[in-house]
Length: 383
Image (cartoon, rainbow, N blue to C red; front, side, top):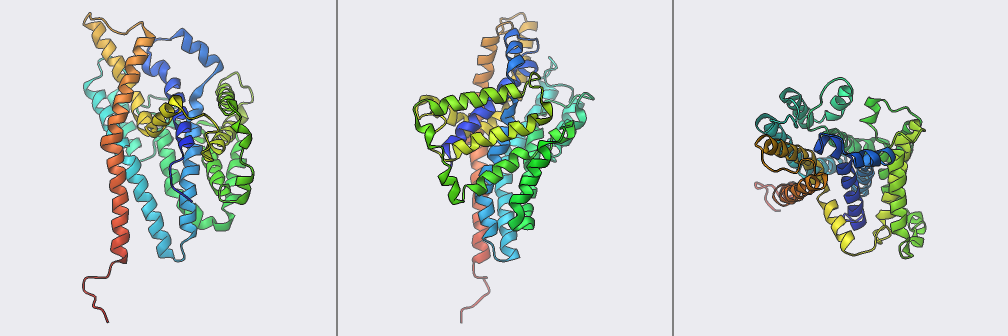
């Protein structure tokens, strides 16, 4: 399968990260309740963007990794493909993640008069959990018990890292039974009450993304292409409707809570399916889609940066107020614009100076290892 970027998937990444940013406005950016946000949250909670990220990750990773591993004929080739996958993921994800963990911890120590970043001890423990990839388990343990720290969003990153570590092994072990194993994983979770622990190890959206990637290699995938979405405006209408339904399901007004996460996972997989054809079904080409795909391409950095940016704006407002200077306090729109501008600048810098250089370095490292493996040893002589 092609590893070429699918722009409609980038669009979905943009929608996912904007939903998470909106969900975290109250309490993370605004220390006091904002009536409009509270009113919206009664009927719409866009935290399902995390599950959309999971479905996208399962799809994008599986469409290249499964064919690569199934094409291996020896254990050595299998190990090399797995090692290369792990190396690329590490260079893609860890530098930015560790950078912003370190910056948040430093801000907690030196830029925290307002207390926006939380206490130092909680942030030290949260930083350790983020670096060692057990943040999801610490997040579950902290529910209603103790302060997690300002890097709480790392729970989902830890879950994805665990998936990246174990998924190649699952492919190798299950082989032709992989589809059935994934279907069982989805079915079991669909009818399971999600305790805090099960919420932070939820893998149904990831599994559905993988199943979609496997289906995309079959002839029936082309036959089921939703060509009816070519009618002008219909695809965008479907996108808005599905987003609205997902946002409602995520609220307390949705009473079938036992099936909430499973249903969200299925609908997120439907969105990924519609975007996977890369036919502009969900949104026509134009300025808005270009903007959303830009957001999607920077979504990883935006996800990492938005909480420290929110906390920094709160700290800035606090210092301006205590100094008797004009501040955005009491002006939610102005506060939102300041925070949004900061996120845009920092995420672009992160993308250009950290994310892409390190991703390219990881790719070059994998290429060099492949070349060195096939090169003739320096002491060898030809016959």
